[in-house]
Every structure is written in C-alpha cells, then in structure tokens.
Length: 143
Image (cartoon, rainbow, N blue to C red; front, side, top):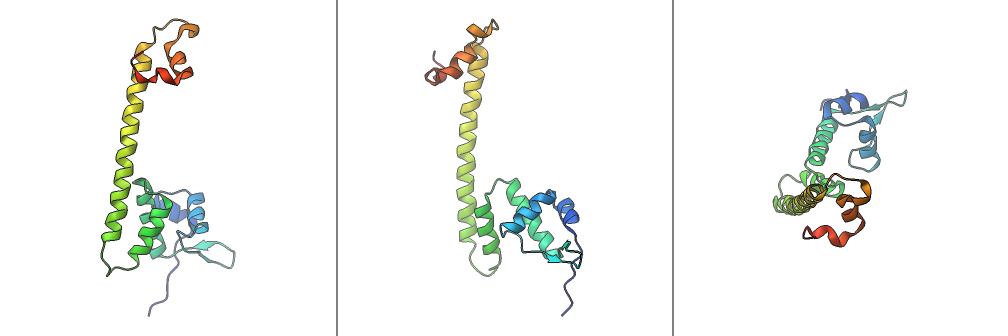
C-alpha cells in the first residue's frame, strides 16, 4: 500500500478550492474537514482526498447548502452503495428553500420598485421612500 502524500499546505488548499485560508481553518474546526497532519514546524499539510473534499464543500456552499446539509451529504457520500434517496431528499428540500427565497426577493424587488417610483424627488421631509420605510402598513403598494 503506497504511503499517503500530504503535498498541500493550507494556502495551496485555499487557492485550489477558491476558499480563504480562514475558511479552510473554520471547516477544520467545525469537523467538515478532517484535522490536518502537522509538520515539525506545526504547519498544516493535506492530501489529495482532503483537497477534493474541500472542493466538494466549496461547491455545496456556492449552491447555497448550509453546513448541516453539507455535513450530511459528506456522510452519505461515504456510503457509495446505499440508495441516493436521502441525497435526493436533501437536494429537494434545498430547492424548495431556494424557490421560497426567490419569491421573497421578487416581492422585495416589487416593493422597492414601487417605493422608488412613488418618490417625487422633492425634499426628504416629503420623501415617499422615507414615509413607506417609517410605516410598514404602506408597503402593500396601494397607498
């Protein structure tokens, strides 16, 4: 069995994954990443599987998955022979959450558009945007 090669320092891990060094440390502290091997000078060293794991985490984060979901996905990925139903369920749950956020953002966009269009461009004392922000009941766009 070949010896494990720990060829990556934390800076190289960060660079290759698109993460910041502090993020790599955080993932290690929270258990998403395994604890790094340390050199005699106490520098972190990582192997290729650790880099691939970090890339997986980064991609999950880019897609908006939370840390708990990523932890579960990582755990599930360690059992390649089992059904992917749980993975599918996590992805569906995340999609529902994304769709809800999109709806909220579209509503927010509509409200901000209405507020901006209702501003007459006069003085702040008569600014419709300030008025609406001060009184949430005016946010329905009908006033």
